[in-house]
Length: 253
Image (cartoon, rainbow, N blue to C red; front, side):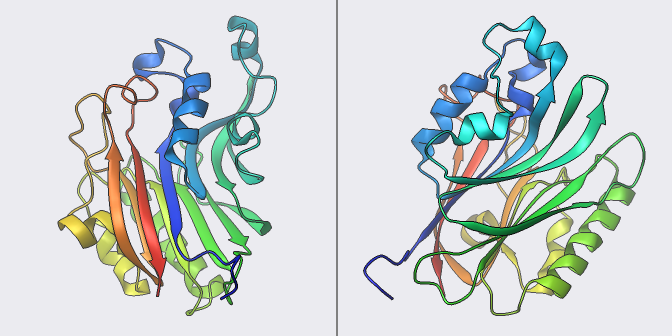
């Protein structure tokens, strides 16, 4: 690898609750931008990202004029991808990936299983300095119903099996809504492993942020070892969203 090559990858995943605190009491998108910058992640996987909302723009004088993913990326993450999933009269929201590395391709696949929950799979490919293979990043926010989640997890598996080369580094992250911790069994057939399961034996508790009980948010990897993994749920984080943020430092194999 050259002197400019990247030897470690710092990733984060965060359900930002559309830029509002728990129970939508306060707009927090400006706090979120500050919090995300402090993480120092190379790649950030975001869920419940508002691309546009005319009603919020009228109600909140500090509502950003840009889509939330662009506002949060600012000058820190030079590349970003957004997948529009839920569309309504006032606007739309979905998943986003922010990256310090060039995103050379991305695609958003509709994996909805019922008309009430619009869900997507956002898949981005990145060129990382010094790496022979492209980095594949998949951001998901799965449904609330177990039967639908099983179909969505299978859709994730099908896409990875068909479009991600076996030797390419892969990070799959997001809000899996998998409180029964069943997703890992199916995803394990792809050779992916969850970072907190590797270190601590089970996924991290991440919801609700104030007193995390459920293990909803995950970071799955293939082609990496895990140097460290953290849940961000101290006093400076719990007011920004109803989920806790997760981070992991990864080393390519």
